[in-house]
Image (cartoon, rainbow, N blue to C red; front, top):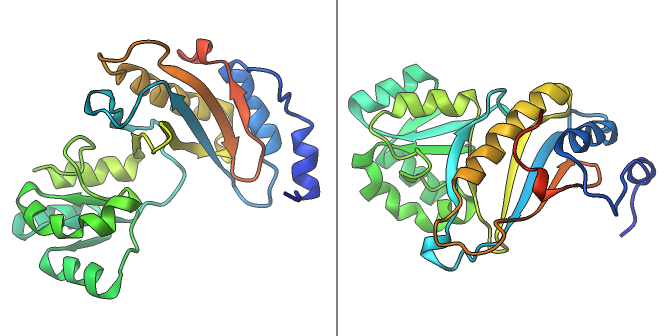
Amino acid sequence: MKRGKKYNENVKLVDRDKLYDPAEALDTVLKTGTANFDETVELHIRLGVDSRHADQQVRGAVVLPNGTGKKIRIAVFAKDDDAKAAEEAGADIVGAEDLVARIQGEGFMDFDVAIAAPNMMGLVGRLGKVLGPRGLMPSPKAGTVTPDVAKAVLEAKAGKIEYRLDKANIIHCPIGKVSFGAEKLAENFNTLVDAVIKAKPAALKGQYIRSCTVVSTMGPGVRINPGKLTVIA
């Protein structure tokens, strides 16, 4: 693959044979995040689990203390008092049958998070094949199916993210923007890593975290030593 001049320059800042300490890895990512826009910093964690087994699933949600730096558009499936509470909390789109019809009939997907009141799941279930593959299907485990939709909206606006395994047993999550600087990125990093460590399945035998990489949108990946994944001092 042909890479741009700036990328090739940034690659020279990364030792591909080295496993970095977390703090040093974040500092390196900041040095390589030199695009002419505010790059997103992502954390990729490969786990030694088998997501095909129900007792080895790793999934949850956590509020990053400094948010993600991205403006989140939130859709809420709710009626009556729940709908009013969601609107007052700052939801961008609120609806019930009308919102389901809009998604099914018009392909409307202009939102980043979907939240639903429990009494709406019979209706929202019709959207499983549409929302599921995009990671937008509301679920109790992620806190996006809840009787307190207003609280869920406020948490999402504050920087709540969901982490879950993909088919390759890797978790991919944003932890902020290059403009955050090392300290804020480290706080978000610690929060996410702590949540993933606590979510270790009891049934797992062997090494839990196999590899970990931090990367900016346009920069090269920086590999982190899995043995150092506790918190950044």
